[in-house]
Length: 198
Image (tube, rainbow, N blue to C red; front, side, top):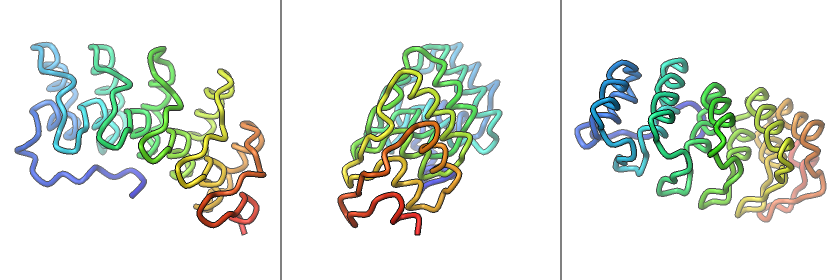
């Protein structure tokens, strides 16, 4: 469900040429397709744009280079897929530190929008458990005084999710640098972070 895996791709023939070039990590082909005016906003069957697919390129450096090409060529950063996720959600879910850092530097990027399940990019980073990724997001969000304790539809905050999945270092970053609340409880099990950590 989470982690650095490609979305299920059953029939690549149904994908646009730009989608295929992105998933294959073909930087020069992407640059060529963009230069001849191929649509940057075309969606695949799962509702993903080429920019979203950069998060699932096997080689991180190629994915980042392609993300920069697409974003600087006018790809919309805040467009959502059918699950309400934008490219930042996907980058956090896949643990793509470089893409997240790039997106956070873009002024137009909305950093804490919830998807249809109520999860923010920080929630996905907490589930992923990469401490550097969590730290990057916490620093960005606290700089702009954005709520670290946003609750998803099940009542989980980023801290609750990090403790639920056993990500101790990510939990410590949320507590120390994000000053995340330790009093919140999820709606499902009514447990606080200390109880999830046991």
